[in-house]
Length: 417
Image (cartoon, rainbow, N blue to C red):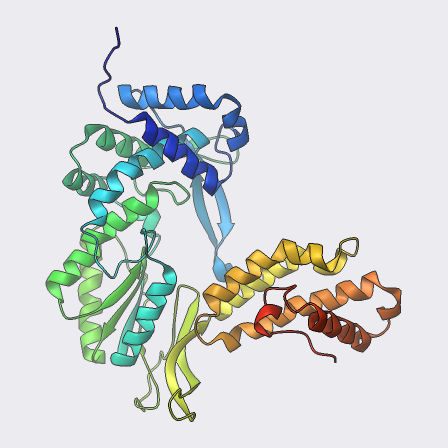
C-alpha cells in the first residue's frame, strides 16, 4: 500500500530541475560533491531529494562562501554556493513559483526573466535617454545582503498557497553560510547570490519595493530595472531631485538603503541639450552612456548623441580575461586550436558589447591579435626578431583564413605593420 506524501511534488519536475542544474554546471557546495559525483547514484539521489521534499523533511545544508572581485576592483562580491542537490531543490521551487509571479512583473523589469535580456534593457534605456533630458542612476547598497526575510515571505505568500514552497523558501533564507575555515555564520537578512532561487526572490522583492510603487506614485515616469540595477528617466533636474528623494524614502521603508555616493542625477547631454552638469554620463549593464560623436543614417553627417558604448570597466574585465589565456605562451598549439578555445568567448563579447557603438570594442579585439603575433614569434624562429614580419605573417593568415577567428569574420583582421 502506497503512503501519500504531505506535499504533492511531481517527480518529473525534479528530473527537469536536475537537467537544468546539469546544463548550468556550477561549483560544488559544502559537501564537495560535483555534478559528476552526484550522477554516480543519480536515481537514488533524485529519489531521496524528492522523498524528503514531498514529506517536508528536506533541510538545506549551509551554502559555501565564495568571494569574487567586483568589476573595477571595488571590493569583493560574496556568493553563497549551494550543494548540487540543493540547487536542484531550489530549481524545483522556482519551476512552481516563477509562472505565478511572471504574470504580474513590470514590463520594464528585465533581469533573470524568461525571454528578457540585459541588451533589451540597454536598448530601451538608449531610446529613453534621447527622449528625456535627465536620468537617475540608482545604486542600492548591498541589495542581496539586505533583503528583509519577512518582506520576502509576505511577497511569496501573496503569489502561492503551496505551503511547501513557503516552508523551503524560509529555510533557504535562513540557511547558514560556511566560511573558508569551516565555521558557520547565521543569516538573518538577505538571500545569497549564487543560488538558483535568489534572482527570483530578488525580482519579487523589488517588484513591490520599487516597480509597483513607481507605477502608483509616478505613473508617467519611465525606468529600466535589471534586478537591482536601475535607471529612472525624468523631464527636468527638479523632477529628478524630487523623485530621487521619494525613492530613497520608499526603499528605506522596505529595509533597503540607497548608496548616495554612487547614486547620481545625470544630464543626458547632446547636440540639442547645450547645458552642463556635474554628471553627464552613467554606467548601466556594462555600457557607458555619454555624449559621443555619431553618424546620421539619413544625411551621412555627424552629430553628438547621448548613446551607449562598452564601458571602460567592461574593457578592463575583458583585458584581464585575455591575459589569463596566455596565448603567447601556447606555442605547442596550432592557431586553429587556439581559435577553437577562444572563439565562443570572443563571439559572446561581440554580440553583447558590439551591439551599440561597436568601434569602442576594436581595441580589445586588436589586443587578441597582439597576443597571437607574440605567439607566432615564439613558435617560428624566423619571426622572433622581427615584429613587422610577424604582423605580416598574421595578416597573411587572416587573408587566407578569414573565418578562423570570430572577429576576423566581421572584417576586424590584423594588418601588416
